[in-house]
Length: 188
Image (cartoon, rainbow, N blue to C red; front, side):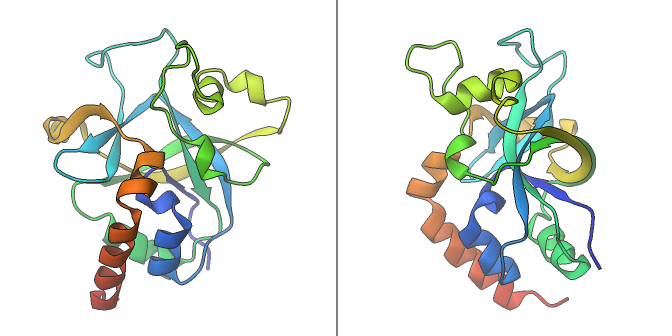
């Protein structure tokens, strides 16, 4: 039986991590959520998303956007595995996800460069201007669940945006080994 779609935005975007945890890569789409920010969890290599609120410094008038991956065909057992893996600190929350009919491409998720800076990446521009890439793919909206960091634990997050590209380059191999060790210990 299929579980609700899951929006992932950090280490779970990596095919290598999904394969290690689930023994397969679920069907997925490039996706985003508005009104959230993605930041490092202090002392960790992975991020959390948290709702942006009035106390969050505004860099633009538009609500912040976090780009990630929408996992569409996760089974109930796979959902239990992912829930257990994302256990510490996170809350499962229903979010409105925007996605298109294009395939997930990890190179398009980084938000480390501001959209208005010289030489900004195309993914930063797309993240700040979703209408720019609507001509390429049809936009859809769907309710999904996401692992969200609660506001009351905001002090455990750094004010530094997390970079997926940097995570892949510097931490992915070690993270996959850790996920594999964790998965061997898991008993459902």
